[in-house]
Length: 211
Image 1 (cartoon, one colour):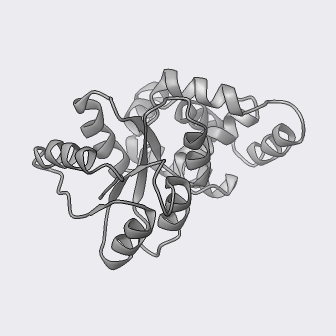
Image 2 (cartoon, one colour):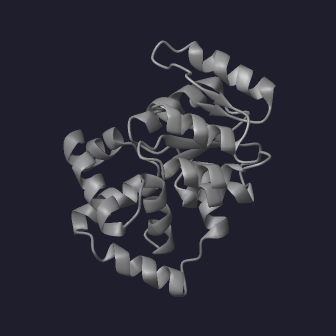
């Protein structure tokens, strides 16, 4: 599903995504209210959601989309790579973010990566975003460190690579594991940390000073 208040943006993204034989654009919405209604009415795997929209902004939309029984994965779209809204959207449960002027191949890759259960964080922009908004001292860091104490040493190794934006396949290669083992570790990490997706786990790792 494509969610953007600009009809030309929706058209351009739709043409791009429909050109991929493994992607079907099944819905479009002009704002968050329409997006939530459409996602509730049918199964949607991935939603590309603009962060700035009338009636219901992207942050609120992400929160409501992620609360649905069959919640779609969410990639937020923004014009600025250090948009205040982007951090809030990630904290609300988005699985990644893209710039609207991203290379078409990156947009297609993001949809596939997120649909497969990984996060889409461009390393440079993501690190600048996290550095800007997250502190590694004070109560926030202490609370994050306490949650990381629940992890085994191996799970911390996986979390470190996950927080850097590596895919399950990348982590498997670096740690000499099967990809299925990495997936199992990631599931346990999310449960132990009390977060809903890889992005939130990465933010928590940054809070704790792991990265």
